[in-house]
Image (tube, helix red, strand yellow):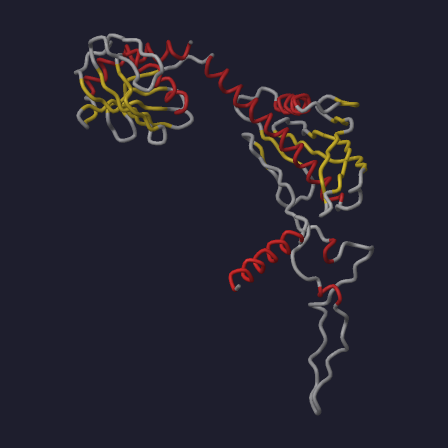
Amino acid sequence: MKEYVRIVTCLSVVVASGCSFTPQEQADGGFKYTEAQLTNGLKPAPNKGLPAPSNRFEVPEVDGNLPVGPQVNIQAPVLVRPTAAGSRIDESERRVRIYFDELEDMSNLSSFVWEGVTKALNQRGIPVINAESEQRIVTGSVRNEREVSEDELTLVTERQFEITQETPDHGRTTAIEVTVIESVESGDGAGRQPSMIADRNAAAMLLNDIVNEIAIAQQENRIFNRANQEINATAGFNGDGFPAIVVEADFDTVWALMGQSLPELGFSIDDLNQSTGQYFTEYSKGAKGMSSLAFWRDEVEGKLDIADGDYMVRVTGDNETTTVTFHYNDEPLSAADVNRIYAPVAATLRRQNSL
């Protein structure tokens, strides 16, 4: 009997908790503070006085009928995310706006950013009804449908956005701002949500989509520039003073090129770790060069005048210069060895970069 009572009690708790519903935008708890009333002022004790009055903690009067208690939306606003290179936001302003600063690979910042704006709209099927190039766009209606309240009522919102771009005369920076110029609600859930916050969040989400498209365009531009840039390599030394091949390119580019070049030179790649810049390989002058990580294995005769065996190839660098160091038996190759293998390694890197 006791077990039966316990089970019924547990089920009752589950049912009760399942029936309660608190919308995401509403605080969970009581709102008794909204019923608080002003009290009479303090009265001094007999033969005592009160300090001089101060308005330091005075609650200011508020004009208008603003949300109170459960009507206050507590959801965090959507933040504008500066994910593109050279983008930044001004934390002190309340407008949905982001700034872009000129980068080395941008010949025309304003045009580059504006192209990202139009591409973002096209990718998402957002119609444009009015446009002034590199200045202003007014979109057509953008429909959003979702369920609100505990009754799962349908709220349909149709918004029109205005996207503006401001570029000073020097052209080294530009700003994109998104605002909602018209918002119409329909459906059973109309009027159930504070539209002002929802409109701002919708503008921020659209601006984030634009910034992401610009970031993608930047990456594609960098890849294009790298593919059309000749790789220059010389024999020199790495940051630790060890003999190395010095390449005038960023780490990501050289890391990828080495992954393609090592098998062609006669190394089989057994393991790798990009975070530490290490390739763990085996070299053979015979027809063995291949990667154990590859799906196909084309045997390649070794092209370097070095001993057969296990090698660790370390790639280190930054956004401008990268070094490649070959380690055999846990020791870096000598300067004479590096000078001897420099030519075929550099030639292979250049060939892979041109593919």
